[in-house]
Image 1 (spheres, rainbow, N blue to C red):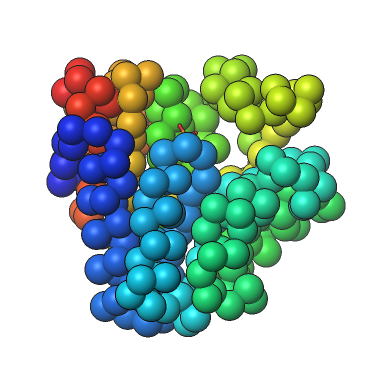
Image 2 (image 1 turned 45 degrees about the horizontal axis):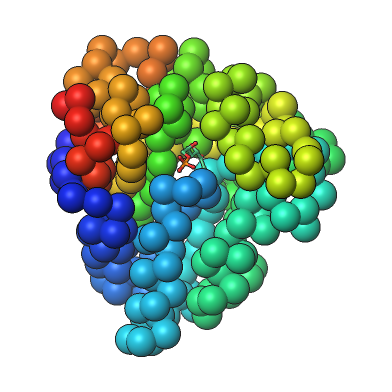
Amino acid sequence: MKIIITENYDELSQKAFEVMKDVVTSNENAVLGLATGSSPLGLYANMISDHKENKTSYKNVTTFNLDEYVGLDKNHSETYYTFMHKNLFDSLDITESNVHIPLGNGDLESNCADYEKQMADYQLDVQLLGIGSNGHIGFNEPGTSFDSLTHVVELKESTRLDNARFFEPLNEQVPTHACTMGIKTIMNSKKVLVVASGANKADAVYAMVKGEVSEDCPASVLQNHSDVILICDKAAASKL
Ligand code: F6R
């Protein structure tokens, strides 16, 4: 695992952008695995600025997002569909039919199987990941099988608390379930780029890098991947 420790979040976002830009400029048909949450926001802002300033094109890029909440209307302000369009896709020249996000409504089992089928036609050039304070990747919570494919999960209370900040202003509860790419799905990516910021990620970052490879810490599986870049700020790296 290549580890880059930065002074702060801005530098983390710049370094992550350099990795992403290299992927999209070396192959105009690049396939990107994308994440939501706070961690990638700076990276996405850099991708948008670069697209505007340097005309880096995403027209032929294909994307697959990690996960989606179950039970929210697609256009709800807190779906990952809305998040991705607001924070990235609406500001790029990406072709909407190349964008893939798991569906959190309808027949969930069949949606998950369809998602795997769609992904089977591609190999991700890079999978971007944030890490949960409990070591989750995607919404693969501790205890998830390393052999898992896209599936429905019940979110841990700690994850729902971590994400409550997005739902509190709406006076709504964080959904109890989500659809997520599985750990095996994530591990199929050619490259994995993990971004982690802040002291509340320090234990999870330590367990990912130095802990035992165990389903108790889903991110620890990345020790078994041959091309992982972890970019974290000093606070997230403080226990390494
Ligand atoms: C998001 C996702 C999650 C987040 C993780 C960290 O699509 O799959 O694993 O990456 O919960 O979230 P933030 O970045 O908000 O701390």
